[in-house]
Image 1 (tube, helix red, strand yellow):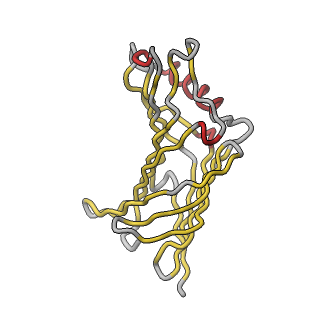
Image 2 (cartoon, rainbow, N blue to C red; image 1 turned 90 degrees about the horizontal axis):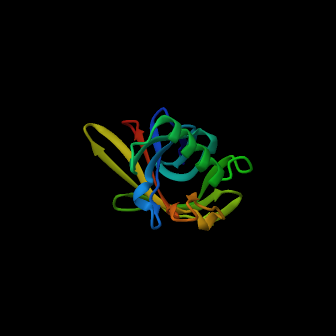
Length: 183
């Protein structure tokens, strides 16, 4: 059995979060695009087939990239405030790392299904991931799109105006990595 491993991170991929807004004043809030700038993932392979996946994200590397909607465009100071609020919501001072560890990996028509444990804020939950592997423009890419609930991990979404404007419970997460041509 040939064993090998692949390493991924910001040098060959992106980890992006998309928040929504809800509440009576939701039109005044920004839907944020957030990038996690420090993360790593390791994929173990047995005979060329993924057999193990583990990932780690540095919560403090959270950067607010942009905001859609709102009454006015999102400014630099507002991005800083949104970052600070997101770090508080994620309880980053007490839980500075988010991790994922695969329990099993199965091959699917589009790529792979990973069943594993997601750990956020000291809480662990089973969280399946569907990995789509595609070839486009001579490049091979693996993409994961999933949703994570604040509530599932004991987190309280940011809110203001006595709850009239708050971040949606679910956050959309998109991970995309470039695979080497021999992967």
